Length: 320
Image 1 (cartoon, rainbow, N blue to C red):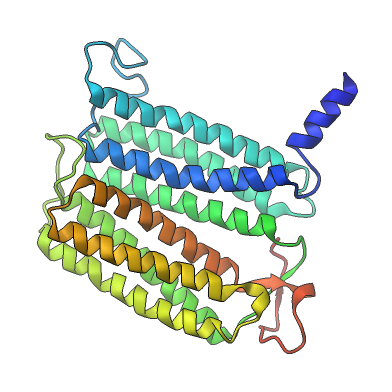
Image 2: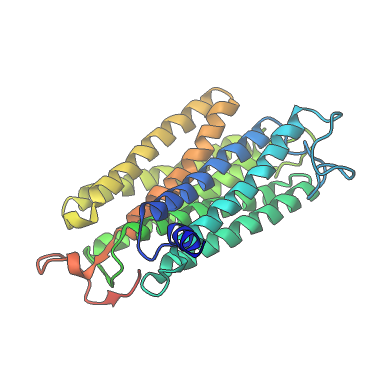
């Protein structure tokens, strides 16, 4: 029995980066991206108030009753997925907890994601109590984007060697990367504001923020195109960075997501915002956040992997 318990413990809580650790890290990222899609489905199908109370579905029942509509099943299904995310976060945390002395960052990041998921459940409840107020819905989405970013950082560090990391690109390239990150953040925030002015409120009686959607569509595009131009600079600049960083691959992925996002954004704007395209646009936005995070995380490399000719900053950062 003791041997069995030891094997189970070592499998779920290994002391090195095993296949299980990588699986849980990928599951954490994919599930946090996926719930943005299901959350978007709740809103885009008008199911936001399918369960009129929280944490129960109705004042009398935890789950949807026969008298409620399909909207209730959609909304309650999304609530249920939050529990799945908590379980995945718990497994991801356990998978790295025994490595916390050599690799402290993954343990901290998975713990933050777990707390963030619980916070998201509370924000979701407030969203229902506030009858889908666009400001609260916007915060809900923004926190999801943040959890995707943290999950991506965790995934990158799981694959990285557990050693001190050093900035391995010219400082001007790092500055360009951070400017692009700022542009991505502004684009996402303006997109959230635009969504609060648009027609997909999640419920016919939900409030809108009163802004002009036509004007804010243009405002949303401005930082988007700035991001696109900056990313082209990142791709070209990545050709002169150390190959160990794989920045050409990550910046190309970032650029590819942006191209698809621009196409979908223009398409949805010219076709009356069909719900399928809007949902794709929402998911692509957090994929953009993930790709941007991966680029930022790969500005540094383990010291042992760098050669004397690699351009890098003088300071060493013990980020594992």
